[in-house]
Figure 1 (cartoon, rainbow over the protein chains, first blue to last red):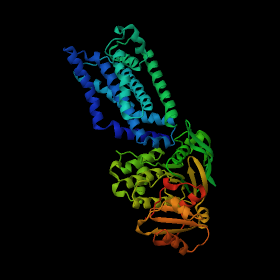
Figure 2: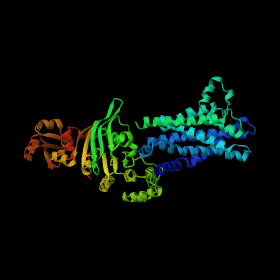
Figure 3: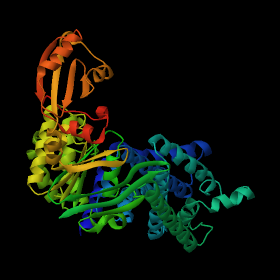
Figure 4: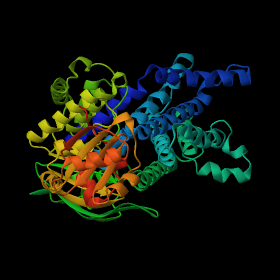
Length: 244
Length: 317
């Protein structure tokens, strides 16, 4: 019970202090709209909204979670308020899960903003909503843990931003969201297969439009493996670098 | 009964030995002072005891629990007040306290109740709903202490609690520390204010360059110093002497020079006249002469032979 109270205290504090602040809520709305407009300008004709939806959802989650978590944790580390959490009688794994839960919830909410907008513009009949939710959740978890991985690797807030982009921007072009994997140069494809968003985006495409290239089971397993791997690696680094 | 036991504790960062094979114990209910200049290893020791820094070698037991292996098992009974006020700027004073209570598994309603009580006790009631960032330095220190005791710890680690704050707030904090101790808390206090340790602590350890140079009760330490007679002369016309020059003039005594004040340490009772005559021979008039009570600083210098310029005094309060 005490552990759960501690867990929920951290989650509630992060939600109210960081994620539910007006600038972040507006980010969740403006970001997918900006991408949709960009596609419209690029094609110059009515869009295949369902076609671009998995891409916009994936990017909204990726951009919403990685930098938010990396920046907030780095910020708390710099101010040493993070030490308060390390001094609390909570298991380190649980503590880091509590610290990342806010970003995961924020990511899931961000992921569904494009869906909400799309629902006013096109028919979303035939969508496997349970599968979409699982896909959004797993992309949020892996992206958040990527943010954690970045937070543990850097010291300064500006480094967290820069390092986040180092991972995110190549991912946009290599994960098959906007450029199909089959059209990528042969030598670049292996890189695509080691990116979690490749499997997340494919799962969303399959659940929304039935157009995935991997079996959903493969995507689920790969996302789970990425999430677990990033989390365990980050915890190891927290123990090594923060409790030095 | 010892509630903290430390044996052979060492912390090494590469080639740098920050804490070097220290041993001490803290009895339940005492205020234990950990005194030393900046960079002596005080904060590193606290971080090792509380689990914020890994121990290179040695043993730490708190309430019988091996903290090197299982510090999480004792974190519920310890409170830590770091040297920097590290609460959340965006949260109000009361929300900060309720959040800190939550970290120890205390429900929000109970945390708010305890928080209000502490804010009242610390004279911060009127600022309870103001964001932490708007607090003055003294208010921040007090709220940080309140956050450290919201879960009613049996042991409180206070790292430089009065550094950099105004005289009135510092005095309030010292009184709060005494109140907490009277209420039963064991207090581990690091400070570089010698008189603070003298006023608050029952025992003190002097740590210098990572090694404990001396550990005893304040009473015993001051008793040793009472063997000293310290004569302080204030010289007229702000005449300033080199310590080395005066040491040659009074070879049988230890000399300290602080501006136009000269302190002469003697182990035997002496007459003032001979000293005044010698200053007059040096073409220097004595404006004031008095007998000074030896302080912990005098003891520290006497025992360790250290230059205490890295340690500060808190006189004039």
